[in-house]
Length: 180
Image (cartoon, rainbow, N blue to C red; front, side, top):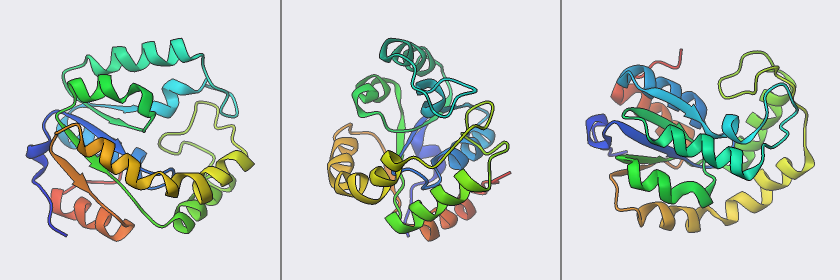
């Protein structure tokens, strides 16, 4: 795997990719290394102390838009309708990828067994298996991979694309990141 140096991505980094591919953990590791603020878009989208109940679109967009104004951040999540504002402020992009079955296995594990204090989880740690999420991970999301890759590339920002957990682990080692 060839990769850019971390410095090439600047001070405002977007992390995108499929559910359960390691975006949240990477965001915190990078933010710690860069002394930046980590933002998890799922925490903006969903209400705390719920089983992933969504905020209104307006409230979600307001939280997102306020966060992108910061000088140093690592923001993980997709939500493509809000990407243009992120593109306007971001200085680099990391696109994660992995096998949908591996992502599904991690979804089951985190939902059933890692309920307390998982990076990126909602306050209150209320979570349950949701059939719409199973369908998203196994069926819908893999079909959108190339569309998402093309859209992110169109931003014209320095970008790193990783296609497996093995490549993500190599990135952690190359940049001296700590999963904490």
